[in-house]
Amino acid sequence: MIRFEQVTKSFPATGGRESMVAVDELSLEAPTGQITVLVGPSGCGKTTSLRMINRMIDPTSGRILIDDQDIASVNPARLRRGIGYVIQSAGLFPHRTVVDNVATVPMLLGTGRKKARDRAREVLELVGLPGDFAERYPSQLSGGQQQRVGVARALAADPPVMLMDEPFSAVDPIVREQLQDEFLRLQDELGKTIVFVTHDIDEAIKLGDQVAVMRVGGRLAQLAEPAYLLAHPIDDFVADFVGRDRGYRALGFSEAPNLPMSNEPSVPLGTTPEEARAATSDRWLLVVDEEVPQGWVEPARIEAPIEPSMLDRGGTVARVHGPLRASLDAALSSPSRRGVLVDDDGRLVGTVRAADVVQAIERVERPEIDPAEIAPTAAPVE
Image (cartoon, one colour):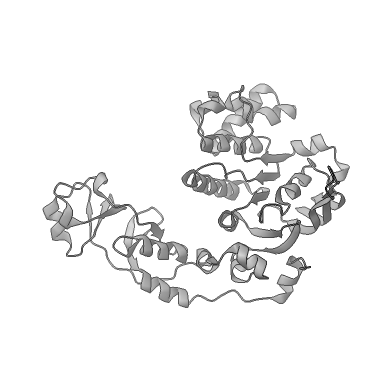
C-alpha cells in the first residue's frame, strides 16, 4: 500500500515570481494490488505527486509511506530500483537493443547478464513482443512497440510497485486502446500496486480500480471507484471534469441483462448476389466467417460474390452479458440499427435494437449514496 499523509510540495520563488504550491495537503491511499489513477487538468499536481513516490521530488511537508515504511528513510537510488517507472516517451536507450534495455534494472540490482537477458525475454513475451523483437533497436520499433518495451523494462525486476506517467498518451487512439487492454490483462495476471497518471478521464475510468480527481493547485477533489464517481460526482468541478456524458460512460459498469435478441440472418463470405438477396428481404445482411461477424452488406447493391472489400464495418460488436454501454453502442453504430451480439469466442448469437437496450437501462439501479463514504474522499473547496 502507498499512503500519502498531508503531503505538500511547494516550489520556491524564482525570477520575481511567488512561490508555487504544486500539491496541497494530499492524503490518499493506493491499495496493494490495485490501480489508482490520478487525473485532473494541467497544473493539478498529478506528475509531481507521482514523482514524490520514488523521490525524484521530495515533499515540502507530510509523509509518503510504502507498506508502512516512510520513504524518506530509504536511500533514493535503492528505493527507485524497487519501483517500476514508465513514462510517456518510453525513455529507451537508443544505442542498446530491446533485450538489453529491458535487462538494465535487473543488472543494476546485481543479476548476471545471462539471467537478466533471459528475464528480459520473458517479460517481452508477456507484453506481446516475442522472438526477434529482442534484438532490434528502439528506432526499429513503432511508438506502440516502444511503449510495450517501456512497460517490460519496468516489470523486469518484478517490482511490487509501478508508477506510470501518461504512458499511452503519445500513440494513436487505436494503438492506445490496444495498450490499455494489454495493460489490464497484465495487471490481472500480475497484481501490481500501480499509481497511474493521465489527463484523460476515459482512460482513468477504464483502467482505475479507484480514481483520484485533483484540482488545480494540487488538492484532492474526490477519490472513488469509477462507477461511483460517474454516478455521484461530489461537486460541480468533478461533474464538469468527468463530463456531461458521464451517464453514458456509467453504462460501462452495468452488465447487460437477458436482452431480447433476434435470430439475425447471415451469410458467409463468397455468397453470390442471388443467394444474398434470397437470404433476407431487409436492406442490410450480416456477413460472417465461421460464425464470426465480419460486417454488413446491401444485397441489392452487390454484383459479385461477397468479399471483405464490400463490407460496411462501421458497426461495433458487443458480448452477450457484457457492459450495457457496448450493447447500446453496437445498436447505434450499426448501419442496420441492429447491434451484433457475440459469445466469449466471438461467434454470432443474435442482434438487438437500441430501443430494447434503453428499456434495459431504465431498469438498472443507480448505486446508493453513502455520505460516510463520500466525506473522507473530498478536499474542501475554498
